[in-house]
Length: 124
Length: 114
Image (cartoon, rainbow over all chains, first blue to last red; front, side, top):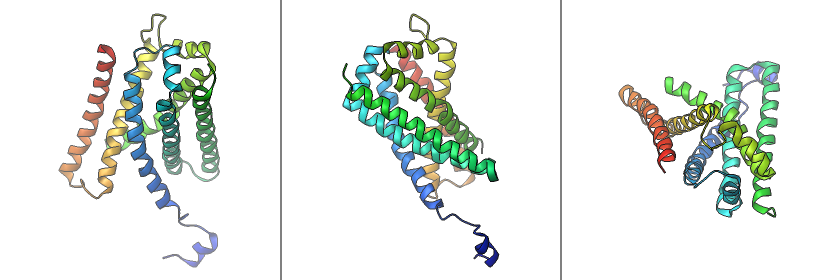
C-alpha cells in the first residue's frame, strides 16, 4: 500500500531493513563465539607485560581470530549505532551522524587491522 | 523493558568506549614497548595491580559485555517467536541480568585466583 504522493516524494521504506536485520543477527552469532574466545584467551595469559602480549598477538592462532573479531564486532556495532541514530536524530543531524558513524567505525577498524597485521607479520 | 534498555546501553557503551580502548591496546602493542607501557599505566600501578581507573573500566566493560551477551542470546530466542508469554518473558529477562552479573563475578574471581 503506497499513495501516489508518497511515491512521487520518494518517501517510505528504503528496502534495506531485512538485510540490516539479518546481518545484525549473523554478526551476533559470530561475535558470541569470537568474544568468548577473546575473554578466555586473555584470562589464560600468565602475565600482561609487553613481551607476553606481543608474542600472543603475533601467533596466527590469535591474529586471525582477532582480525575476524574486529570485522564482526565493528560491523555489528555500526549496525547497532545506526539504529540509535535513526531513533534519536532527524533530518540533517541524522545524515551528519551517519557520516560520522561510518568514518568512526571504518577508520577505527582499519587502524585495528593494521595493528594486528603489523604485529603478526612484522620483524621483531 | 529494562533488559531491552540495558541491551542498548551496554551495546552502545561498548561500541563507543570499548572499541576505542581495544584499538588503543592493539596499536600500543604494534607501536612498541613504550607505547604499551603508556597504555598499561593508565589502568595499573607500577607493581601491575589495577588502579581505580582499571577497576572501573575493567568491571564496567566486562559487565557490559556479559549483560549484552546474555540479552543478545535472549533476542535470538525471541526472534524464533518463542518466549513472549508474560511469565516466560519475565523469567528470561531476570535470567539475563543475573547471568550477566554471575559471569562477570566468575570472570574476575578466575583472574584473581589463577
